[in-house]
Image 1: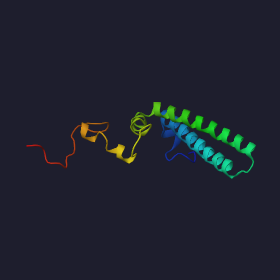
Image 2 (image 1 turned 90 degrees about the vertical axis):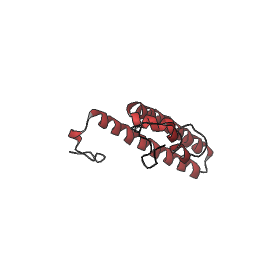
Image 3 (image 1 turned 180 degrees about the vertical axis):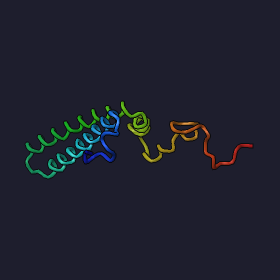
Length: 120
């Protein structure tokens, strides 16, 4: 029987896919908890409760970072994308096209842009 989060029969999934699924679900739960604590800390008028909720929220951020790192180590394409976008400055969307003129990249067969006219 399939788990609610699986879109294919569990029996047909590799252990790697199942473990990544576990990590992704856990990451989602950590971010959900971060959001809940953040909202509660913002809404309370009690400073001591806000301090506890903020502390708990930040613990969830640590958990999320640990799971994200595990996922990065177990998903080569995620590793590529995280290296491309994280800890960069400037326009995030501009990073998508940065380096495209430098030749073949991950997933590129080295053919370049086939829409352009070849040099003569």
